[in-house]
Length: 469
Image (cartoon, rainbow, N blue to C red; front, side):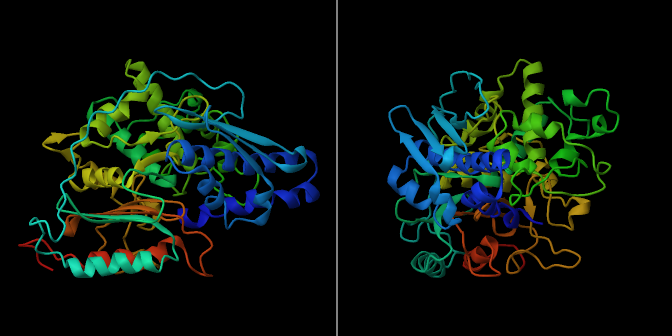
């Protein structure tokens, strides 16, 4: 089952809270309550204190359209202390999250929260060059009228609930639109787009010779286990490790729900997963795998006396000017790379542009040569749909391309409810789309809802000069 189909099910699990008070006894109801409360505490905290949105707007919009039982959870926001507490009815359970400058919000349900170093202050970014139609810098191969029509129509009939759409061609912003309440300064939640950020961190470490992706990942819990200790970084990046992990949001005690909303150490929880297949034998989408990667990277950097918490900013984010990016940690202090990264649409575009340029920014190589080709090369057992923490637009053995009107060479970051960064090499284009595509018509997914817009944007831009159609 693909990522965008999986993620919506968390709302069913969390939203069945009220029924759980009756149907499930004791501990089961309490566990269910903690998941629902944990979800609301974490999202409310981040949307208010990281994204900078109005508290009333967040509480009204972010949990709408879920199971009505979610409305029974009470959310209290302390704007002075920057803390959020969510409580389930009947004393079944609750959760609390708090904000730390530079690190965003962390759930504090499992007891002690690890202290963090002072965050590295971001540098002043270089402004994006823009190429609107009336600037004298217009790009000839763009049909600006068609592009304007596509974006205007998308936001006028905003059933998929777009929050931002930004288009970059030849490294220049050619158009960007925002829904009411959002603008170019608003950071947007990644959900699983964070997995591609995680791959970028690994690439930066490989660039410095700190790890070899073809070598076994040095997970401490696997010492002495011949089967697990053979799992490589590449196996983890491609989600072919063979580790069992329940990415089932409709099951209260599934692995992913425990990891994101109950456990203090997300990667440590994933490290204890049992082996189900030999490495490379099966592909299985797993958020646990991504958090295991981040935790192991933290260990590798620590062994080299490199500051893990500053690494992404110093190695990638500052050089490309992505100063709005916030990677949120779990209670152990490790970034939850599977799900919790915030950035403005413009900074999501910078990350996409870095891949369009094969890891080079303003003449400086930040990722290994060929890293973009690596992450977009298909994982054998994935039927062509997945690379190394990136989704692909390849046609499968028995399925069409995800975006039929866009070539197979497109690869992309993808997250729950329709968060995307599309990298389209043939037209030297990056498209960012964020939103909240929830409760769509029967048979519709966030991806299907976004497809017409993405294809219309693609069609509005011609091929670069000297490139055959």
